[in-house]
Length: 143
Image (cartoon, rainbow, N blue to C red; front, side):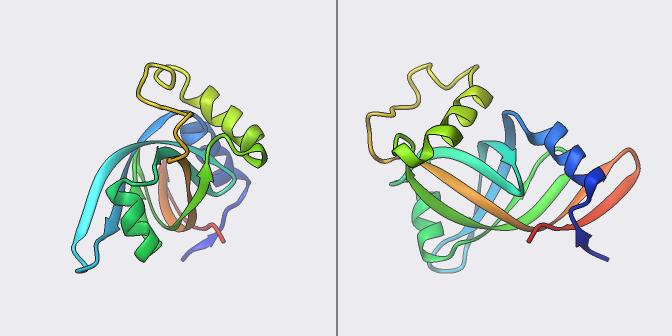
């Protein structure tokens, strides 16, 4: 039975995913065909944040159907993808700083071009998920 995020599951989520992690991100295209790819993600307060290009296939798919799913390190979840816009917008400063810190090992290696306004923050608002931790299964409602 799914329950709201509690102190234990929230702590596990933060410990396990509150830094750079690889997640499988699944979306669907206009024909309903599934697409999955690996993304670097950072978890915070019920959402996973990804830095990506607004013109990418995943962003085009999420603009048509925001439903998505993620999986990584004994965790699977459903969510809603949302383009927050250019990472350098003033309203993103605090979040962008936390994202840069989480992705510090690779962020400035030339792969990310913050001068390009198509470099955006993808927020995946988690809705429900299953987390395994030391033999315990947590069925979580995030929202």
